[in-house]
Image (cartoon, rainbow, N blue to C red):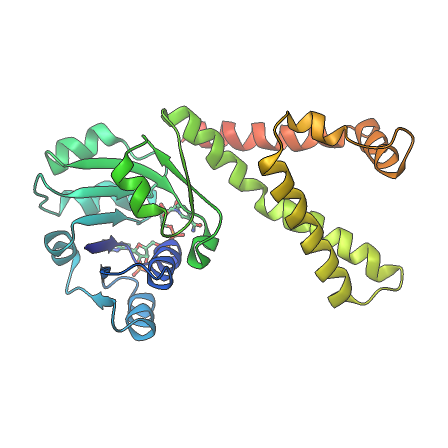
Length: 255
Ligand SMILES: NC(=O)c1ccc[n+]([C@@H]2O[C@H](COP(=O)([O-])OP(=O)(O)OC[C@H]3O[C@@H](n4cnc5c(N)ncnc54)[C@H](OP(=O)(O)O)[C@@H]3O)[C@@H](O)[C@H]2O)c1
């Protein structure tokens, strides 16, 4: 199976690395020459699996699956210069790309879907959002993460919004670790504890059969967790996180 990438930038580098490290048999990857340094680095790191095309058209001609990963303002112009045939399967990574225009420009395609991968797909972990749900695409993307498929573009926008909480979440971890260090613990010990602790919390939440509010309420009345939760609720802390999400969604929706 040949997978092609048009736009070999930051996210394509992660996705290509994810496929190459997935251990899946029979994957052949062809990347567009731009960015030159990144495409050359991928071919050098995975010489058995990755080759650099002469140009974008060679990617389209040789690949069964074609990832589009250029910047939003470049996307339609890049697609306009290419000739597609109806058996091509196109995976778009460009936010809010107008699919009607793509179909007008590219003509019939076997499939055209929206996908949001995240940097950690290079390690085969984390969610990869897909819209609409198509089994063949789910199977392909399961090599690089946990596929979360949604039925409608508006639902995809909500999950795209949640990705804006990566930096705030890392900052929360940094503050927990920093507080431990300020009070006398060494950084490696604090970081090992905090990351293992938060990793376990997420795992438990994923498998918890009831609501997450209910999980948050699983504590001794008047105990330590109760004390911290009541304090943060009193500061409207959780409301602020939802306001941050709402602001990001409004920004995304205006584009
Ligand atoms: N970064 C993420 O985590 C992430 C996650 C999901 C989706 N996305 C989306 O994925 C897209 C790419 O994002 P990115 O972060 O990877 O940005 P990026 O690093 O700037 O990648 C864009 C790439 O497109 C290349 N390019 C420009 N014009 C081209 C052309 N005519 N033909 C072929 N390639 C061309 C650029 O090459 P030059 O350097 O030579 O100009 C660059 O390698 C964006 O639409 C972004 O919103 C990003």
